[in-house]
Image 1: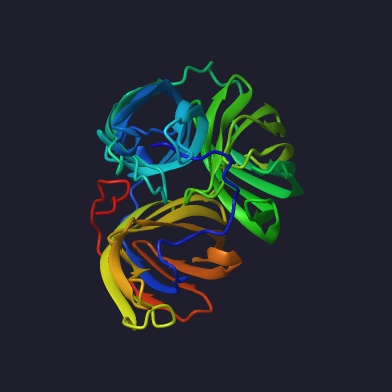
Image 2 (image 1 turned 30 degrees about the horizontal axis):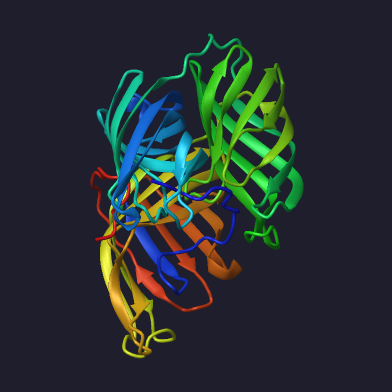
Length: 426
């Protein structure tokens, strides 16, 4: 579960050397979260974790600290962010530091059983347990032998004195700080669509002019991002988080709501050390449309062209389960596509390749809906942007993800429950 802090938002990496172009069809059932107890909102609690490291003369390292979650439930799927204090941070030696670490978190909840994980996490950290009412209890495990436990309760809030439901628009001004101390400031238009139920609120934020950059804050490209939002309203204050559920970007927000105006701040620990402010005015108090929001499950088969990278493998074929989680506010969609049972290739040292298991691929799925079609730009490795087009109807998602490399995968799916967050490497 140990991680490095200060990760810059950068090109999204698949678990293979080659960028992948995907032609997909996902068929599933969108399950409304209102049919069961929802975990949407803010949570706080404590965790403990220990790991015995053979390379450090079998020394056992432990950490105990506080944890906060902001979770958004859509159907059976969970998106959100986690903030751990006193987290073990290994830097290639046997003297790990402890510090505050945040991460996007994804998973599933079937009304009783909860499974959470960090997306695209090399340690394959798993949180498996139960949730009921206002409490969460989970066991922690990872692929490097760490174990632990976690308990959390829904964060208390005063009764809401305002209703944030509606569509808001305005501008933001943010600054990100990279690990080398360099900063990158940016600003643009922002639209926020929220639906509030009691004190819990969730929706979608669309930000223009968001930079994609490397670990030294050198800008690669500029994107329009659509991200999931969740939190709680206490009195006239909304507190929560904004996340790209594939893991590239997350930050906490606090906003004051006064009738038709909202002013907010971004401050506190987050992966990109983002700080800033935003001001919004309410365009409408109507609940944003969410016709296609929900969780979808199915299967896929994929064929990747490995010929440019391997002299002994022309194409690599594999298949497995696929799932999609979509949050919608009007024409804005924010979601994640998870491909399980992935394979990849690694060099055999002689110009050829070996096929190995890969962790589940957790890919961003966001964009603007026009009719029943969504288009998106998905960042891949080396600054390459892939084009995502997805078509919705009442039970089916059909889409394509293409890039300049000419790889191709086809997806067919049937409805089916999904009970785990991500699959560890074997």
